[in-house]
Image (cartoon, rainbow, N blue to C red; front, side, top):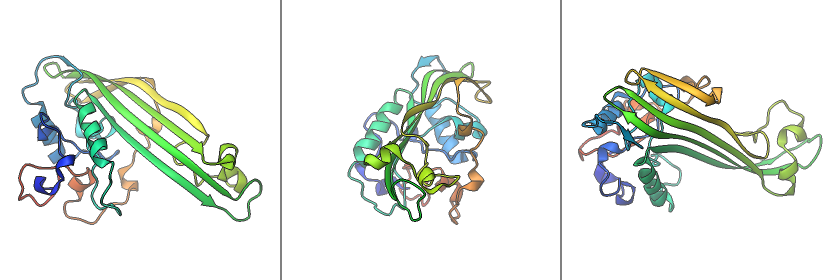
Length: 251
């Protein structure tokens, strides 16, 4: 996406180079070369050990989509193109990434109106949340090692009295729950809290702690719908502003 097409409120703040702007990767897919090149440019000149690195540690393409998050929130093609809270949300992600913290936050409001229920009410509403984060604590480019904390928090809350004590699966008597987006029970839980360390310039990542296997073993990019576009690989990684105002595709 050309820089002159991006609202000023969504560009990196003053003092943050454009080359540090990186999109969220697609789990299960190799990170596109254009994104890897930008990350390499952002790491240029960083050879010494440092805490809370502002640039994500170096990882191979087959690992970076699983063990990294970008610092952008902008997404093209939305049904509603104007989001009032997007500038402060984007600004917060830029600021936190300068201290090594990169995250993904997804939220939903679900409502179901069911027929032929076996028990309970036929209308239920829920709020769900899924927060994933990687907080880089140190990076040593000279030796090719880096370490970061990995975590995930999931939450589900029923809206109304029925949502607090009932769920669509039990009321319908089915095997699956249409409102089970991230968590099947009301309340908050932490499925992942651990330590990850990269070795050999990002060729290997060692994991220790409480790890959610589905964050790594169930990631399958082939199961995601892909847009029919010649610049598909770059667009899947999400848009970022590029210095060349004449560039026609996102990187």
